[in-house]
Amino acid sequence: MQTSAAIYLRVSLDHEMDGRTIDRHRQDCQRIARERGWTIHREYVDQSISATDKAKTRPGYDAMVADYQAGKFSAIICWDLDRLTRQPRQLEDWIEAAEDRGLVLVTANGEADLSTDGGRLFARMKAAVARSEVERKGRRQSSAQAQRARQGRAPKGIRPLGYALNGDILEDEAKAVQEVYAAFLAGSSLRGIARALSGEDGENVPADVPATETQTRRLALERNQRRAEENKTRGPADQLAMKPVPEPKPWNPASVLMLLRNPRYAGYSTYTPKETDDEGKKRRSYKAKIVRTEDGEPVYGLWEPIIDENTWWKVQEKLDSAERVSNRSGTERKHMGSGLYLCGICGTKVRAHGQRYRCAGHVLRSREQVDTYVLTAVRARLGRDDLADLLPDRDEPRLAEIRTLIEKQEARIRRAQRDYDDEIIEGRDLKRIRSKAEAVITKLDAERLTLSVSDTAGGVLSDQNPVSAFEAGDLGIRRSVVDALCEVHLHHNPKGRRDFRPETVEIVWRR
Image 1: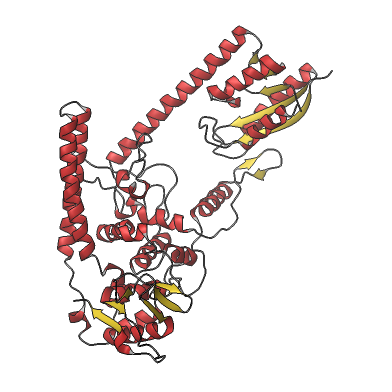
Image 2 (image 1 turned 45 degrees about the horizontal axis):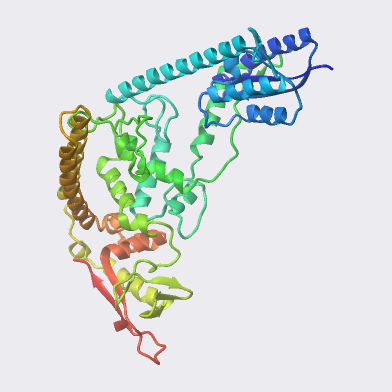
């Protein structure tokens, strides 16, 4: 009976994406099949896919495993054993297949006989050595990246929107980043910003955020353009070696959040060690990415920031707001007062209920009537000549001071942790220092949120024509202005009265 064989071809990183390495390996594997008189059932190819990360999907490999389990072939040909796998666990699966079902594994540099003790020992040693080489390489690369970060040099890898790989600013993209930050601070939701970046229109879509390609598609297009300019070709057909370009897709709120969280935009040097993923604190993991000196001071990159530090920290404060995380504040709203207006009896935020605002058991008011009254009052206030004198006071120097004080307390916790790791202090000392520092941070956070109450409405309130800016803003921006200027308390409308009674909507202007 003629042996049916599978050919497995893989290259970890094909920078050129021209398939030439795969072609060379294919020729060697096909030669082995011809010499042995085997028929080739199918070729399974994973181009530019690593076998080191066990969590990474290898479509070709997975298809080959499924076909072998279905009994479609009894031999595997690969260029080298580490092309097949770098995972000891996967190797043991193939060894088990050789022992139980007679699988034959052949490599271009000699037969890997998994049916004998010596062959299995050789395979295991080779896999262990390959794994060790990968780990050493990973440590060297991590060390080099950490050194670059401490020196403030731009990290290697995928460039963020707005920056070239060398750290230079790309003006058009940088403008989009700045508009995203401005829209979020002005009250736009992540979903609304994502829709604007995707080129959509609508009531909750900020008009100033430009339509922008997703970064994945943009990078693929740029790479293919470079290859076309360099005239890099593949094979006798002289075809350009192009990387597949993803189909146009809309932005999603998660991508907008990553953009708003990126410390590089504020000029901070960043690095994230793989072994400290900040488990359990995914929402605040951006802090762990900022490289700091031994004294806890941030390291600044050698590139120009796109967003000033103060703006970046304001965005982080808004993203970190306990109310936003635990409730729906900051997400897309469909109604002006939902989650914003307060029940005049219990002080709870009302919710939209059909055509009304409701606090269960207390008040039920017409949305249209209440919104019309509130918006008319806000427009009148925005149109006053003495608006600047009526706005809530802010203490920007104190906000900056608070951020510095919080950073010092966080640095104190890190120093104590290092001292504990070096066995300089005891566990109870670490606990005492951490508890004291966290108590100070909690108090400072509370003060910071109080002072930051009017951040989101700044664009409208500082405009030369606040009324026009208010009218032009999306729902999120208008909600932010209302929240910055006043509190709205809804009371009962008198029983039996269907007409609107202005005294039942109490507007308390902030001072």
